[in-house]
Length: 264
Image: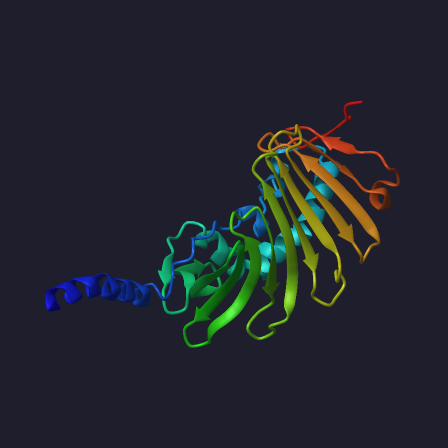
């Protein structure tokens, strides 16, 4: 009889043991948001005037895009670099905190070496992202960026903060990435008080369009809207700005960046 009872108790003990061990059930690993959600590609507007003779149209577009590029790649270079490098890192699941964690180091030229801890808190199909950044001897676990997305990373938002010394929001971002249509869009809104407060730039990559990259800049400081379309990698493109050109037409440049007539 004792042997029978012992035999019957074995499954109950095993079930109890499994229940205790599985108290922290591993959440599914979320997809990382796309690079364009925080670090759009503006390489076509890097200064390369040596190739061009007449670059008025391209130069105006490059200057306009450059203002926002500078915010991301100069003023906010640390969190943007931390995110871009994080895309190539492996994550581990912390069963105590129920978080996915990416931990790695980055080196930012002229800024220093930083320790990064990026966490993802999964709740059903919703994901909360937090980017903690530390600099030895200066600050620990400063939340330089945070955001949310869905599990498949086809839509979400970011908030990027200015610095540990001035921890107010500088940019907010709303982004989407539709794999079915090949269209990814990110709208960067300036939250920092100053001349460009509430200005925005919307970056779109459309894999199926002739001009497969575009930005729409809303400059509240100049009460101006600028539309720029270009092809990557050829470099040809067009720009529209009523305030600058005093008309509502597009003004084009070719693959050598020289001004050219726009196709009718």
